[in-house]
Length: 150
Image (cartoon, rainbow, N blue to C red; front, side):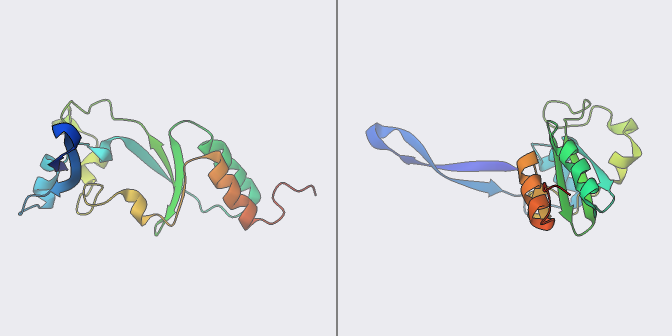
């Protein structure tokens, strides 16, 4: 999303940013939206659907996964998901796809009807764990005997 900054005179005539206002074209459609996106967020991570964790051993495995760099776990209306942040190697400066004509099917099927351009994905998460400690706290709350012998 492009942004405009309203500037105000500060002390000594310095220009100080006051407010950032998103600029959105009036006729934004799914067909034109990608052309306005400047951060290509959808091309900076991969996700994998997870089986719903139920047992302590399931959550112990999730703790191992979230212990790695750039790995998060979230739960939303569709279930549990592993999120691995990593920029696509075909993403060019300016956010365009370097292999657009031969891109994988999953890229072709990606819908941008409502995407990170509209709002951060995290806004739709019921649970979101980016660190071991965050998930461990949840595990201790969910399983009262977590970490206790026997």
